Length: 55
Image (cartoon, rainbow, N blue to C red):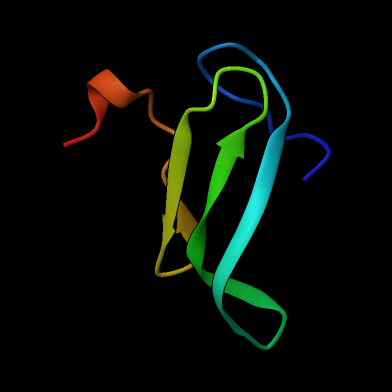
């Protein structure tokens, strides 16, 4: 987590865990503490694309 930053503003990200299996986050989100952008985690993969590039 120390090397991940918000791709929009480079702020720190806070992890929210919804589902965890064997010490791996399966679903949840990463939220930027600076700009409040939310990056979803689905199937253990964080979507760190900027909001305008998500489909």
